[in-house]
Image (cartoon, rainbow, N blue to C red):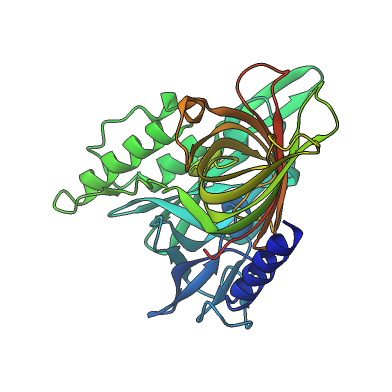
Amino acid sequence: MNKLFTLLFIFFSVSIIKVNAQTSAFEEGYIINSQDTIRGYIKSASDLDLSNSVQFKTDINSEIVKNYLPGDITGFGFNNTGFRFTTVRVEIIKGSNVTYHKRFAKLILSGYTDLYKLPIPQEEQSIITSKGNTFLYVLQKDTTDYTLGLYETIIGIHVSKNKRYIGMLKAAFNDCENLKINLDRLNFNDKAILEAVTAYNTCKSPAQQSTLHVYEAKAIVKRGPELSYAQLYIPKEPANVSGQGVSVGYFWDIIQPGESRKYSTKLGLNYMYYLRKTDSKDPEIEDVVIHSVRLPFSVQYNLKDPIISTTVPFFSIGFTTQMTHEFNSADLMPFPSVGIGMYVNKFRFSALLENEGFKLSNPKILNVAIGFRVK
């Protein structure tokens, strides 16, 4: 058994060495520099991180990565999600302090004017009693960027809201007399702001249709080969009963899109060689060799963002089904499982405890696995 595991481990190691390991997740995308569009790969990050800088390289296998700040380039975008970001000039207000910065903001509406949404870091937010204080909108009209923000100030125990976005919209929309919107009662959220800007765009240019950029983020799949070692544990069973095995297969880690991407679904398909031994002098009791095809399934919770971070601890819960070479009724019983593990760059380390059936007193199998993400 140990020799078989050693041979499989050597084969597994040699196969993954041939794959060029990238320690960070880069997605296909492009940058816009003046009027030129340069295609390549952009490092995945949160909208907040991308607002300050973007890392780009022209070849996925290249070690040369360029870091661009707002203003260095006009903007950038991702092919997979369709996200588009543009350099904007934004006004940051906190208390009595007013500062101006260049940031990359995400496009959410285009037309006669363009509307962008920009998250702001905690140190730049005013007193947080409403969700609107965590982001800004930026309206681009001609060569002017209008910052639309909702701010808060505190005097004693009273919180006062400064709806500065209303005044900025009034200034931007003052050249359209036929605009029928009560800006004084306008809420500070995507729906209300988008409707107001769309109405203004239609007023100024009826023939030009405003385009709402709805981004449908797609699930991201990490996949690759996996090798594991299994050890049997039987509660209240004589010490002379033992079992161990090795398996080799493939895994798919399907990461949910958007804010829910800390959750993922892990699927697997592998072949297991398993030897169950009984140390007995009775010649009628023989060791049992089991060949099986196994289908592990689990729901995984990632303690860090699996797209951005290079080390991602996780834990999981699920079940495993299997079909042995001597198919019987026991193969119809799923093995409930719990597990823990960690992604380290492209490697996936995990330990999974499976229970043979639903009784806690049933035999258990501990699987220790190493996987390598090829994508």
